[in-house]
Amino acid sequence: MTTAHGFREWTIKSILLAIAALLMVLGGVPLYKHRHSQIPIVAGPGVTKVLKLSQFVSSLKGSPADTDVFVLEGKEPGGKVLIMSNTHANEPAGLLATLIMVENAVVEKGTLYVIPEFNASAGRNTKPGDGYPLYFDIPTEWGAKRFRMGNRDSSPLEQWPDPDVYIHYPDKQLFSFLDVRNTNRTWPGRADGPLMERVTFAAMEMMRKDKIDIAIDMHGAETMFPVTNCIVAPQKSAKIATLVSMNVKAMEGFDNHVEPSPGNFRGLSHREIGDFSETLPFLLEAPIPFLDQPTGPKTVKLLLDGKDPFLLSLAKKKKLFVPYDESGWPMDKRVGQHCSVTLEIIRQYSKKNPDTAIKVARIPRYADLVKTGVGHYFHDPAKADKTSIYYE
Amino acid sequence: MPVIMILYYLITAFIVVMVGWNFVREKKSVNDMILYLLVLIPLVLRLLRVK
Image 1 (cartoon, rainbow over the protein chains, first blue to last red):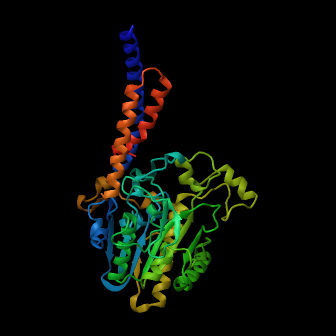
Image 2 (tube, rainbow over the protein chains, first blue to last red):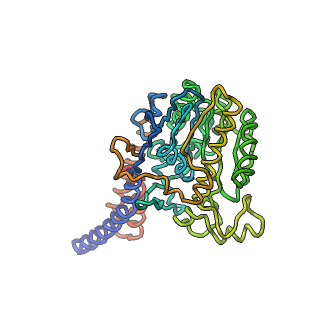
Image 3 (cartoon, each protein chain N blue to C red):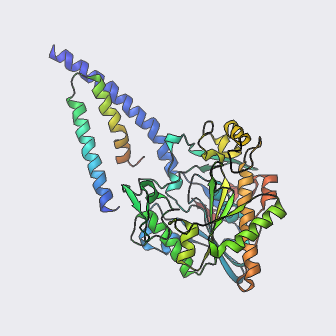
């Protein structure tokens, strides 16, 4: 009798264990592959060297938070610009804009520093609870180019445990526990802090040591969030931001208003970069309907075309902070805004500071991207010189 | 890897062993067996550094 019971018990346990193992494999393998997949980047003719962020804070070396810094130097000396994307890796328009710059831009005067994967760990994280797709494809003339869809925060596999409350350094402002992994709350950071504080500190060190004049941090924001479709700038960058806003509206036909950087809200790039260095910071927000809460399923299509019937209904009730119609907010438009606003910031800065002017060529503007699509500017890694390929 | 993170991995491993041992010792209740396995899944995925 006991033997029969024992046999039944272990038969049930074996079946249950097999089901649990199957669930772990089915759920775990796609996440593992996502975490370890690589995006090939073809460094263009303008890239003169590629640094690692760990060169500015040695404790980042070898960690999954270390990331590439593409440097594009002009023949003539001039000003220096740092452009960052994937500070929040679930806002990919910035990533596409910076990769277009790395693959195409040529600097004639001054220097461009580009960090496409600022939060490299968040770029390998995801948010299954919100149904995030793991990848998205951008059509190009040579086939689809695949990108990882990341998360807002870095992976707990790199930085664990989270505190109950994140106490910002050095201001001691209290934030949500999650913000300890958010690289737009950990500025200006410190060399011996949690990993994400070391990432922002390394960028601060780079700006201070290399005397970078302008820092541009590319983001995306919900259409229902008031700080969207805008340039966020502190007082010291406000004049340039206002001129940029007026010019892109008049010359290129899209809105991008200016939001002041709040003085008492700490940890943000547009606040701390300005306060802790000589650099002029700008944070660019392009609308991303995918991140709005009241939408349909979080599909790749929604991420790319920004079309959603629920948002359309809300737009008719004037509940959104951006113009919204049946055409949605396509990725080409969002990337185009980032590129044009960046070029305009550089142009306005150069006009005000002729001694440290910066001259950049071959970065497409808003109209070019809307016309040809983002994929037109990506080069086929299969046909590229192997020494020019970097994996992000 | 910081010391506190290593400690958290050790705590996780300890809980995995304890829950696993409860699963082995459970003789009758299939519901409890399922419960133990459901608790184990995220902990094992963390130990394997998958999620």
